[in-house]
Image (tube, rainbow, N blue to C red; front, side, top):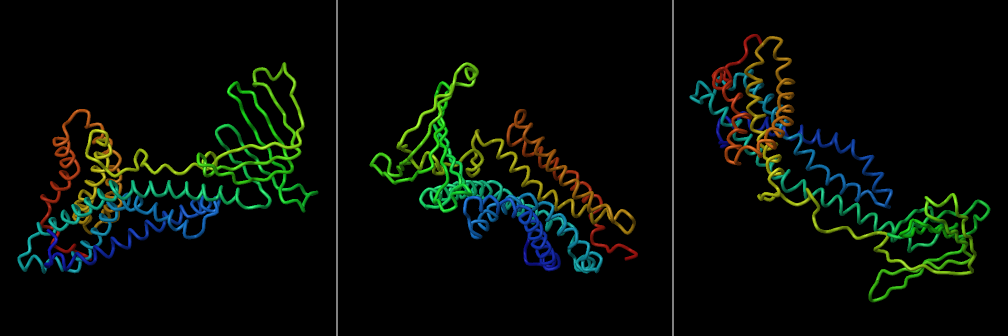
Length: 374
């Protein structure tokens, strides 16, 4: 257990400091990489810097979940190596502290990190994905409402279930005009179509009890083109007619639907039922990776020595963690079809933790001795 004691005093602060810096660095790198894409998506719908910051915040928990195991491995490796080579672990050994306390410290932080990984992946990440989807839908709805409500030149394409509206900016010869031409494409169930063009159009609010968000497009001096279904286009002429005025009603809900507030697949918190069994297994495999990474840090320190091996043990341990992440989750998900959950948990713990524990039990006493020649 992690208790205020000699092992915690020597390893706790260096480990926590390094882990925090590593997570901040990894999250920062990934967020910087995502910043341009999220900013373009937010600005496309009239978002502001605060909206971009919120979208970046929704991305952070998923990055933490991915980086936590490797962060624990690297931070504990350097904390142990420095304490060992400075002779601090020898002092602990001479004062009666056994090497098993070091293993207990690693397992304790691994279990705590695993619980954190489970909470982040099972509860925080789904809600963050839900929040990101709802935020983008709100930005889009607000942008559409602003474009419809405000006057001025337009260059937009909006679609409803039965029609698409294409608003163009004024032509260069009509620079003083408030709006350019509006094209409306309507399709019928038989795949015939109609295109309406109007150079003089306005949008009026027409709320009713049945449709409080109702709008009406008033079209003046319009021309309409009727066309046949595509399979009859070679045998039928287009119908063209002119009309002085017409109008078309629509609901704002048809163009910018309100975001679905019910959580979609993968957006609800983890539930321990049959429907979520595969998610529970995948999240549990990722959480079990954290104590395995803590033990691999001890293995890397023991296997490093003073020779060339010390340059490859840490990259090899990181590669092992990544392989465990991919192959282990595949094994756990496939194992659901053949084993009961309690038995599968025992197998997974043996596969993830067993090899490292065997190696540490074999060479564990050496962890307290500094490497000669350093």
